Length: 534
Image (cartoon, rainbow, N blue to C red; front, side):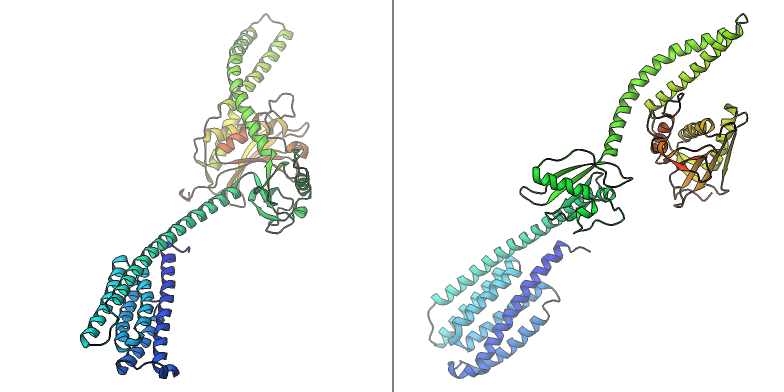
């Protein structure tokens, strides 16, 4: 789990408490060494040797104990107890050893400042006032006892020094803690922004590569990994761009030499889409380069969608204008066909006119379907029951003569979320294509709607035929708008079917059949966990 700012601030204060207790231990050790060490003979005699030695020993023990427990318990309470010991034993040491008064008073000044740094302002000033009072008390005690004193000015200056040091260190400590808190907050904000930026870069559909001056990859987002030559190997830090994409490395070298980029689409590996590389420096004067890989297939799809949207709006208005005279032509043909005075040759011509009128009407319907693109209204659909009903409705409205259309699938219940009306439209287009194109020469068409589940557990609907199949050169263009191999089609049926699938969070793809024939597979959304088991 990440460290919170409060934890960081507490850690910083405990670090300060560590040095404070270490300094106290040093003070106690020095005082003990002066009284019990080899230099004792060079010091003046204390006023009360018993009090001096007892004070030194107890102060050393207390300082050691406070140093050992510095990491546990309340921090401010430890600081308060520690400074209380410092002042108490310090005043005793000044009383017992008056000749070392100046040194002890100066050492205590650091204790007062350190305590003011760790404690709130009122406690810090209170401690300074207590220390000043202790010095004044010692002065007046010596004065009352008739001892030689340096004058009132010295304790007063020490007292003012204690208060000034306590005030200054408290202000500095408060500003330091505020700066630490601000730095922690800014650090968290920067870390969050860095995570967001990294997520955005990794999720960009444009490939992004960071390459150093030696041509080694430093960063590659997910889109770039998919566009590199070896998609199975993670292009981690240090990988050579010349090994991952030699053609791209050459473009980068050329750009670094002459400063001009080649906008010609580049294919980094077989079976991968073309990309247009764009280069820029990470910073001005930097040897590191950012490479943006624009997938031309995405750009083409976007341009295609914009073109189709514009064309759809234009075609919709045009189709409405065509339907009116077309309806009049069909009505006139029906009236002429009822006439008994027409010769057989004229009736044949009328039949051709009627057939072409129906074909024209189908083209208009496809164009209107492309223009409308109504949003999906998904419902819970039980696929096997839906497939059986569809076959019954289709056979009833489209006599098959010698062709066959069946629905097969597992006995288990398969449920998905799909717009029933749009699913019916998709199946109609797929079955129509299968009945027209999915037959061997001179044989009847056999079309099957098969309901199953894929390896991920998601339901699928296959529309299969027993025809000659689809050549590989054609299979890659099946779903392009206006692409058709027939002189009688519009090339919009499969495109509209796939767009309807996408509107329902489903997929439509062509699957080659090992034993011959063609299969168009609808990958339906996985069943909702809120649905019952049947």
